[in-house]
Length: 298
Image (tube, rainbow, N blue to C red; front, side):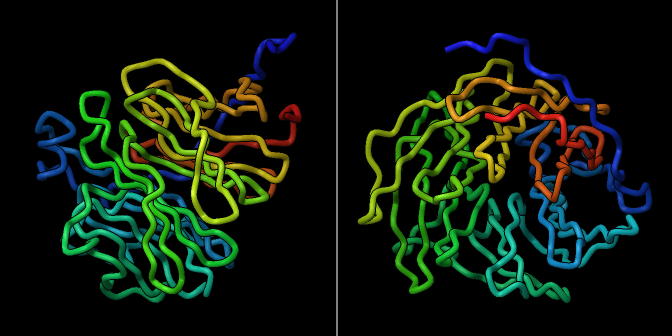
């Protein structure tokens, strides 16, 4: 089924940019592997809000967790030897959980300090490189283990960690599993497969397993889908890391709208708050915002 009208174009505006005083234009191990050895002053990802409206971000190459207050004041609340990528507020409301490429799953007290290990290894084996995470209402934690996988090596994994400590591997053949989000009923898990330039749909069965995994939507470009979010109307928001926008998809995977970046093209992730989306644009180290009131229903 095709839409009768072209997708709505929604312009974003700058919410806040990383202050110059916090930028570090140096070459890191991460930039050697991912940015051809260029000096990268920051790479923002993992936007996450707490109950007081503070926005938390990761700075991947420099191992930093950042806080942006509602007054748009920036600070570093943690810095450590890692490459943090995803953030999620723990159900207890007192901690951030972090997917870290080097260190596995970590937890950080919102008051600051050093991130503490939550799950560093599986059966004594290190992860490939955890990327993003989402909590279910019952406390289950879903996360992706992306590493350097892709179409040449479709061995990326999707895991579920229960509050009791049981770790289930739901998928082990993903070509670069990245962002993920649960449906409102929590019976479907959507996973961005960056190097496949697609979003996969994983039905979750009552016994905790998955079956009949399918490709929900396909894209194009030199990169692919990255972070995602879903609202109560089941509209799926997909940040695309090279096309400079967030795609808003219907329940059938149709493009309802595009939230266009007013800065660079490296749109990596987003979080929803009320009628707004806060979006990380990593090329320029900025957070963008978009009003969602005009979006068509799915």
